[in-house]
Amino acid sequence: MSSTRILFVTYLTVIAVGLFYFTLLGLLGR
Amino acid sequence: MLRDNGLGLVFGLLFLVLLVGQAISGQALYNDQQVAVGADPVSLGYYLTSSSFAVDVVENWQSEYLQFFLYIFGTVWLVQRGSSESKELDRIGPESDADQLLGAHVRDDSPRWARAGGWRTAVFSRSLGIVMGGIFVLSWSAQSVAGWAAFNSEQLGDREDPVTWLAYLAEPDFWNRTLQNWQSEMLAVGSMAVFAVYLRQRGSPESKPVGAAHADTSETG
Image (cartoon, rainbow over all chains, first blue to last red; front, top):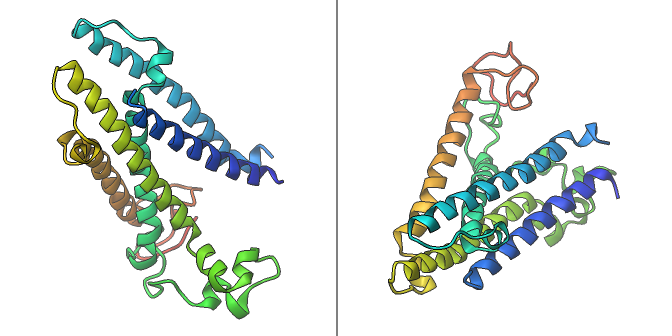
């Protein structure tokens, strides 16, 4: 995989994990 | 490899450093408020797993992705005479297959989904807008859920009743967080499109060449 494609997948992953995590914090009512 | 990916790497690293800064300053602010009401200060670990931190992060995410989504979609249909941010005035709309290298005009190195035709090309033709719009919707909904939890923990601290998620969507807290971010994005986008008519930044693809006429639309330097 090219370095540029790794960067692309990394950004998507960071955003997806972030959205999941921050939604979860809300749902858990912390 | 590093030089080839300078934009993506530098902005990604800045994001991480600044998120750490937000976490540290956010914890300090949170603890100021805790002390003010006679409550115990919280650890960084507690703050990083709080809905208060979550809503502060995602309310900014949603507005940035809304901005880019509207810009990507809006620039298909709206033009700005003289702006490097706009395409030419006679190219409004999704353009022809020849312009977009589709159908009979695909090249050997065109992406597979551009060559495939049918639904795959239809999806790929909108993939940037779909992803940016999708991140906007998901981060705005994350804001609503995290903001709801943070709002309710404040309600309980003030000995007031918690509200349902639907009721939170009608609270000033939700709309104030949302609109204070949206207004700034629209101002920045609109002014950028117009500033790019008369102002230049040598070497930037966001600008026309320094010597280009103010009337030239869609020229990037």
